[in-house]
Image 1 (cartoon, rainbow, N blue to C red):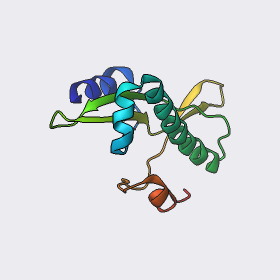
Image 2: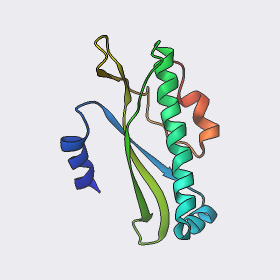
Image 3: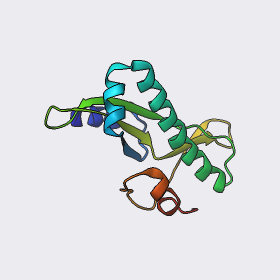
Image 4: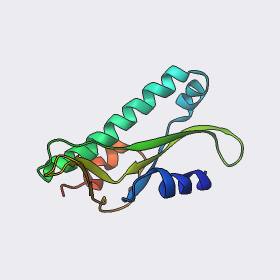
Length: 132
């Protein structure tokens, strides 16, 4: 995983800040996701929409109306003890791309104010991401 992440950062992603996000799901959902590829796609889609929505809202706070985000996701099916532990690793560009004055895409990076660690998103969301 570390080699792949290094390859993405060195050769695939543009030279802009990136952030890794990890989505872990409850045990009951892990077992269902292990056998249901359509559900994996749906869960990942909801997570990516929420993440890109966060970045686009932050861009709108800076007055940027048209923006695009970028990310690569890895689905990891096992934990370090070879146990079933389906979770998602997302490497996202930490910012957005928006049209510059000449119309060409321009990177507008910004860092989140701190690293977020909490039990569930609804509990930490308002305090973790204060308005910029």
